[in-house]
Structure formats: structure tokens, C-alpha cells
Length: 143
Image 1 (cartoon, rainbow, N blue to C red):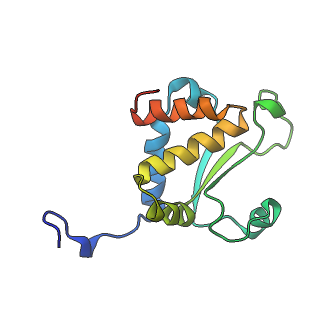
Image 2 (tube, one colour; image 1 turned 180 degrees about the vertical axis):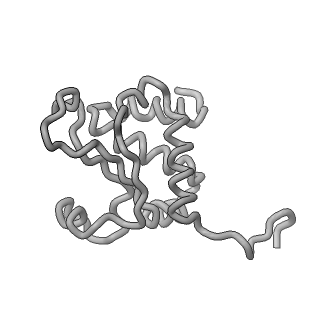
């Protein structure tokens, strides 16, 4: 056993711990990006529900790491409609943990990536913009 670690007591983060991690990751996002998210609800669930999986054509419960539901700027988010549900970002804990276990990234970096991409795509950001935002959030130098 490696010194300094008690591996026998480590466990995957619970939903509550994962929510705290997601809140911390969101707090590291640049101000201009977070302002787009005014009123967006961040939810952590173990898996997407069957309706979401069917609608998106997912082959497995593990295919979807996150989802933005609602109206982005391109769909007129600035003009709320009567009866419109709030914008929500879902993070799916078990698929994210599975992805994390298979890659060489920290769990915080994976969660930040999913947050930035779910929010960014919905608000019309390019992949280059999202990469830059992610690097700002994680402290990496933009290249």
C-alpha cells in the first residue's frame, strides 16, 4: 500500500459530495460565462432518465455525462415564456465517474469540462471558446 493513503477507506463521491464538487467547479468558471447562467439550476443525478436516453438515441445509461435543458440565447432565453421551466444543467454522476476512471484527468477537471460544454453549446459558444473558458477555470494557460 502506498504511504500516506488509506485506500481501504476511499469511496466514490455520494450525490451530495458530487453536488458540492459541481458547485465548486461552477464557482471557478469565469464571471462572464457564469453570468449567462443566471437562474440556471444545477442538478446532479445518478443517471439520465429513460425518456432523455431515448430522445437522444443513447445506447447505454453511461453514454450521457451531462445535459442542458431549457432555452439558450439562440432560442430566446432573454425572453421567458409563460409556463417555461427554468434552465437546468444536469450532471450524471455514475457516467462521469465511469469516464473519470477510464481517463487521466482529475474528477474536478471532468466535471468542469462537462459544465462548460453543456452550458457553452447551449449558448452558442465554439469549441475554441469553450476550451479557453475551461483553461481559465482550471488555471491552465490558454495557448
